Image (tube, rainbow, N blue to C red; front, side, top):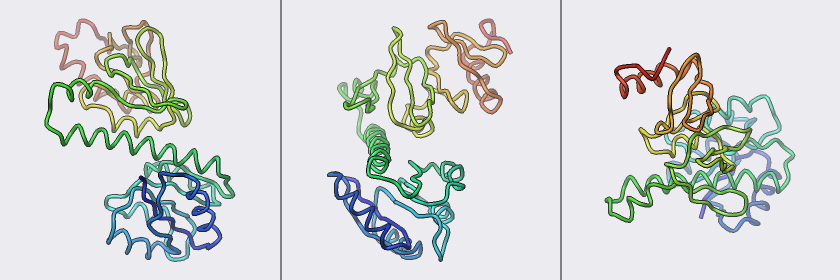
Length: 252
């Protein structure tokens, strides 16, 4: 169950969110608030999983409100102003719904929040639980929603991940691919540390499948390559050079 708080200074907007949410079985309303100050008081008292946040509110801008939260839950912005979209995603918002939005858009945004919640719970469970033989085996897979089903994808089979709009496409060994509704940055946080690395704002590679790098490209063992951007180059080269101190396989 995903517990949510809706924040909007327009009563009609709050009623619309409640009406849409009531149609989704695993959404549970914790509260509806007409101001950011009211929402802050509630967040100090209770834990929720998701915020629906309007941006243009009289007491505090919704973006500034989310930016000021120490440990924010998942956030979906609901607003009539498109100019805040870039800033909202810098805050790792799950989605940005532009008013007036229909149920299909609302349901799609909630689906992204649900997928993120499932991934984070899986990661937290792995971190908290003692390791057993069966758990070690399950830790070799990631659970992703692809189409109308949840697929288990083996980490070792993932060669690289590519951001495609609001989706992440996993390129697998054997030429297969799995596409899931997700943002690459959120996917990155759910991956096991030390096995995958971001090399570009649109690409994550499985380090076990890297065969070399040169001239702004990372070469993979399936004979493909992905771009290596300046922002990620130093960290990538430091890791690879540390694994291969002779430098014979790799060039600047």
